Length: 292
Ligand code: KIV
Image 1 (cartoon, rainbow, N blue to C red):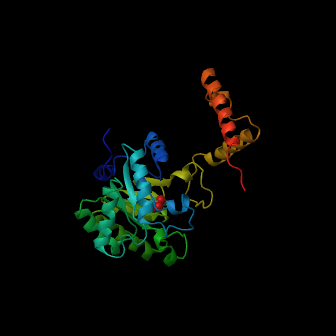
Image 2 (cartoon, rainbow, N blue to C red; image 1 turned 180 degrees about the horizontal axis):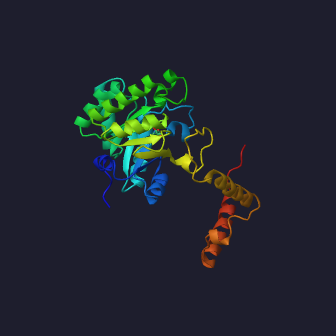
Image 3 (cartoon, rainbow, N blue to C red; image 1 turned 90 degrees about the vertical axis):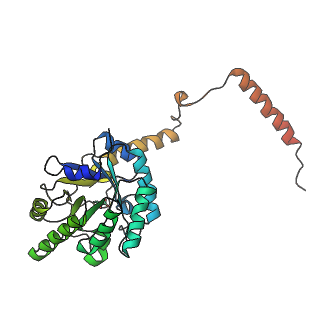
């Protein structure tokens, strides 16, 4: 099956819902693909979920590339989108294109994502002109955490909602193939979805978006440090993981693991020769010089 492309995602608008998942490594990419996920986002949320930081700000290009490569290797049919880390695209259009290009060239991603509205339209235009598909992201944009004053619902006033619509339109006009709407009132997301010519992918943005995105660890119940209201856990694998790991620790301590079925044998002749060899070595070691 050919890999889903950015134009395929755009063409899905109005025909079927798009299932996107943020995943960060080879194994999770394989699991997500087996479940039929359309788009795998290597989100900068890996800074928190995988690297243990308090926010997404300090993850680097090299760290993101490391994970993008792993996800690209683990997937065959999903579109892989690399999230551009904080300050990898804001400083200048030139560095933005160069960094985005690295995700396709070195990471083998099929597209990049960046946060922001009208102010990043020049970067989007330049990337698209260079042949790099771009996914936009407005609403709660965690790279603006310091300016926003925390992880809060955005666009709650009429003016803020109108600005968000303008930002989303600017991104679509600049060439984004789709736009993520994060943590905004459902009616605002519905209005943006109606007006925008490209799909909206919601997270905490209600049911009317063209697609949805959640984080792999949240869907499976593996990350309990932050649990926003918009997260739905579809499994409790964290509890199952602790139970399985406890079983392992107990089996090691009680010598129940490893059993004969996990061990390797050798022929009696080889074992006899080995024993003789050890005996010989023992004799040799007896002749080692003693310390003064
Ligand atoms: O980093 C991320 O995982 C994201 C999604 C939540 C949209 O940006």
